[in-house]
Image (cartoon, helix red, strand yellow):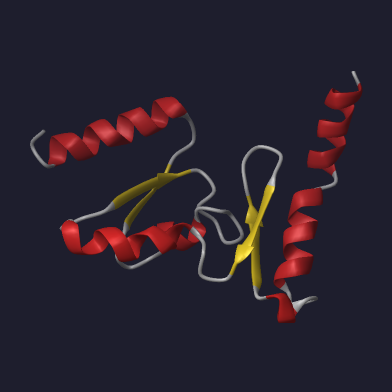
Length: 112
C-alpha cells in the first residue's frame, strides 16, 4: 500500500539522515537544538544537553558502573552521546535477542 511505498522511499532517499545532517551543520545555530536519528522512522530534536546523557547527573554517584545498550550508537544516532560518554560502558545491540545475550554476559561477569 501507500504506507509501504512511503517507507521504502523514506529509507532509499535517506530522508532522516538528510534532515539530521542539514540541521546538525548549523543551518539554525541560534535555536540551540540537537538532531539525531531516532527509532525506525523518526528523527529526534531536542535542546542541546538534553540527550540521553542528561540522566547521568542523577545516577552516576549511585553506581560503580553504568552499562548502556543501544542500537543507534553511531555519530548522528540517538544513542551516540550516552554510548560514547566516558562515564558509561556502551554496548551496541542489533536486536532484542542480541540485547538479551549481552545483558546475560554482563550479569555473569558480575556474578549474578
